[in-house]
Length: 327
Picture 1 (cartoon, rainbow, N blue to C red):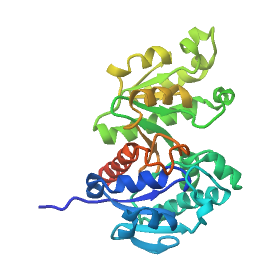
Picture 2: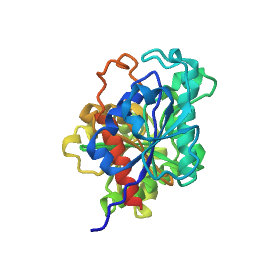
Picture 3: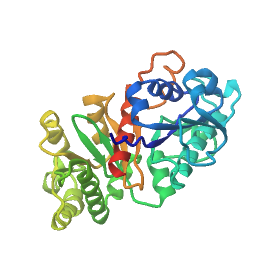
């Protein structure tokens, strides 16, 4: 019998004062996760003693020196206990969580891991530690030098975002016809691999009622509509622009494979309300898959044993699935 490929998935443990370390440890205890992938964890040395599952891994003090062949833990930081207290973020912890992500990216660029799965970080704490940080998606796009698209992939609904972490006042100016056409092509190309057919894409408007023909805003007439027509001319199966409230009212029987929303909350409010635990954040456009759970650091739950590992489990399994499909 042919042995199934177990992709090496680089896992950054997120904010050491948040729930990241505990949900990663809990997820890696699950037999279905252990069967699906070979974990390569980037985190703090203190987590090895705090979570016994990590004691079974091959330990490296610092960055990964070579392609791993077994479950591996890279202790990128060695924080003082006061700098990694659950629920009490620190400046040192802010620097450390960014270092974990960069170490995972470095391993991916070297070809030593075949996918990345990131536990939640605090943008505020990373920025307070001295590095302005808008999010994983933006950092990965810069590191790999490519255009990317954030996709919330859930069992009931898929939603991609035309803009990510922007103030609402900046969204209209960030929308451009050429950029939207490129995003629609990327979305169609990426999902075709998964669906094995061209995906059907619905495109949201940015204004209430999709602008009411220009009465409530001009973006649909001047930018979004022309982008849809140009994308359709290249073979992309896309329709719209639709009023978001009417479109998402169909979410339980959505006639489209994916929706392209124009801004963060327009899409994420719906995906989180429909299925918070099983919706996975996927970054499209990278040379390797990247996933993450769809929640934050949850300081109030950290260290209490109350945080659910289900979102992290689904994010890890999705990373493995996408890596196998790509291989």
